[in-house]
Amino acid sequence: MFATPPDTTPAARQAAVPAPREGQAPAPLGRVEFHLQFIRSFADPTFDAVRGALVQVEEVAWKNYQDGRKAPVTQKAGPGFADPDYDLSVEWKATRDRLLAAEARQQDPATRSRVLLVCGAARNDGSCPGEISKTWRMTQWCKEVLQADNIEADVLDLSLLTSSYDLHIHPCKGCVSTAMPLCHWPCSCYPNHGERQTSDWMADIYERWTAAHAVIILTPVYWYQTPSVLKLMIDRLVCADGGNPDPTSTHGKKAVEAKALELQGWDYPKHLAGRAYGLVVHGDVAGIEGVRRGLSDWLDWMGLVDAGAKSRLDRYIGYYDSYAQSHETLDRDTAMQEEVRNVARAVAQAVKRLRAGKLAPPDAQLQSPRPK
Image (cartoon, rainbow, N blue to C red; front, side, top):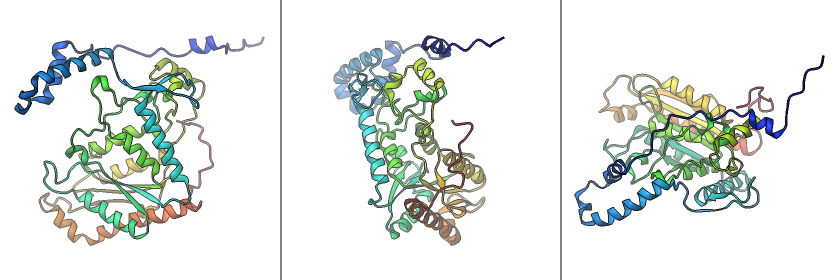
């Protein structure tokens, strides 16, 4: 008896692709509901003088919402894509082109070393708290150390999400859980003009991560977790770990095509692997070790390389002391100040070794039996 060989024809493979599960999405907004949503942004009485113009804008926005005009300006993908005739978003392609240029600069040995400093606190003195964050102060200490070592320090202050006009990091939609190739690098979920999901900061942030030779994340603990501004960025970086650099291969967001592509075998490209990293996590009563471990595990998973034990810091500032005097407590904690600077020093050394080809984890050549 001989086993019947499996049917591997294209039709059989297509038939084996699981159908997307549906039924969760709510019905589209009706005209009245749309009006109520739209007009909320213009409640200030100073808009009364232009109500007529707003009515006209709303009519256009309503039509665009009905028509699902996610990417209203497109161009043919052209050579180098799976489907050169696919109409790609001009905005997405511009971001992708910037990432390619940033990657080329990052890999050019003649360029100056660059470290991305991510200030993960949500507060600054330009918004409701009325005071700078301690995380910001630590970020400045790291910047000074790096600049003294002739390393370019690019400060990404995520608190700008709370104090800037119409600046957003929209939430990850979880495309990867449908199929990895549906998650595009860079993310193609935003902007969505038809649903007014615009002004997405991630297009700029992807470029800054790509251009960096290392990253240092500095963050407080909010309720045993990272602040939401930092978590938004982390979630949207999922496309950097296994994401599909060619949206034409799935013709945009065609779930069935993405499932079929993954089932044919997906190599899960790690677009940011090889960069070095450091961490500074601080808190006042609880949660620092869990947050630091979670961030380390995430960065390790993405293929970044830690810069040694002194590059991963978690400390309490004034354990159970008052919030009102926390800056003064940090002023007195000169040991922690030096530990924060040591994180930057460790990363600076790691960057030098990285660019000299001397920094790699011992298991770098091992192949994972469970790629994902």
